[in-house]
Length: 424
Image (cartoon, rainbow, N blue to C red; front, side, top):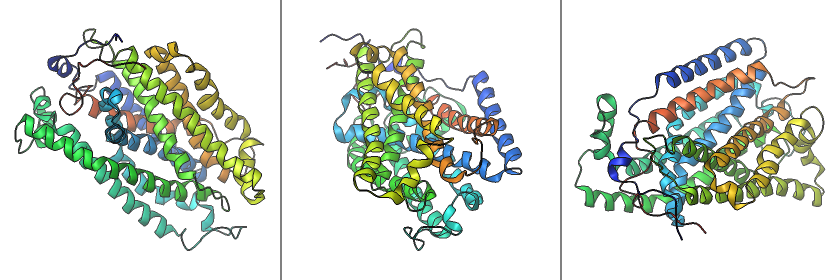
């Protein structure tokens, strides 16, 4: 089968190193962070619950997306997914947000009293208050996130190390210093490539298991517990698979953005985008199945006490947002990606990716707000926009620092950059 993907040499791959964040975009992201900080500061004094709800939902959104960025490479290793290795650097760049995520996690405790309903009287007996204690929730999840993020960083270290000497030669200043740290005690290209590949191969299954378990516990404590009495055994899968789908969408958007930008160099061909589009389509369907599976069990099992999660979302003032969420995440992507042609067009795939990301931002908001907001009027306006812009700025700065330091495609560890990609 033929491919439209151009052969990319090592020198061409190295030419995709940006070296610095463009000044305009650096200014935009810094302003976005400032706007977010101002939005939070002006809202928390007047309506603390509303301010912290926005912080909470954005934390859940960006954290799930970022951890999926490192897990993307691990999944490819375990599944022998050669199709996606050309996208791995774009995915790994999302992991640069994880240190910021951990700092944000620590700050969430300041707003916990405005978020966790089980800190006060609850009307249901179906809640484990021995498990849900303020100290227990933050200590348990803090330790687990530190373990997961630390393990993920070690995995990422070995992924970057194999290209580090080549990258260091292209840089100066602090970026060169950082890359030389990655290349410390270099034993030679051949030995290091084999050594790092073997370590990544051994670490990848463990990383995936840790990701699934720890993010499930995080989802139980920081999202499911917001609705006392509601219990879902697949809530963890529902949460971290949503982050995985967001990551695939981000990669699709960024690949379209960078393809052809470096002297017309096309790093990914139509079959590469087709494979990525098929993966997005599959997880659009799977994520929707996990949502419906929760509802279906409550319906055929006749568990009325658990309707308290679905009732405020599918009826009342939040229902338009819920149905919009399902249209953006499932209905539109399902029909947009159903055919072969749309998946081969990077422009079309990038458009669908933006639709999905917007849908999931709304879904994370709907995961939090309807459980806590019992007043008239939707708590969705300029405060939420400003705080969300702050998170966009934080993520974009983290992502840009990573993606401008490394080439947009891997050189040594993954399959050769110029090898053909194949369609179905």
